Length: 210
Image (cartoon, rainbow, N blue to C red):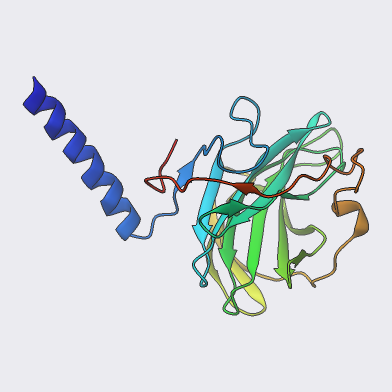
């Protein structure tokens, strides 16, 4: 029995290591690692490592009756308080994915669920000097985007179209322009939670830490 359990554990470790070496972006629920992450209410977290070796995390953040996109970065020891995108827009912003431009700047894509007046649409936001651009529409009537490639001025995305089919398209990057409403308010309120200091953490033993 002990030998069987050991072999099962060994196979699991090898599979995780193989996925990491293959470059698969780890998807996890790092409760207690990213600030203010709530495993019982927020969406799953997607992580990626930038060219400088820092870990980034993005997820759908539940607040004010809707989901916004949260972005947090760590140097392996400290996670920043999340930047929120798509705040108070009356729609759910879900399934974010993050990648990096050739200059190392992060870019995030996600989709908004349909409402009474509009169908689903894919959104994007890129950052420069730590400031994310105001969310911009990539395309209408599409959902569940994945970043396949990036350049200085465009993204190649895979997404699900209105008919349920999968398409691959290239889209221009939106201008880097920050909108004040997308920044958390210093004293809290509808534009985001109260700010809090960064958190010292113990790095997980695996990028697939749950």
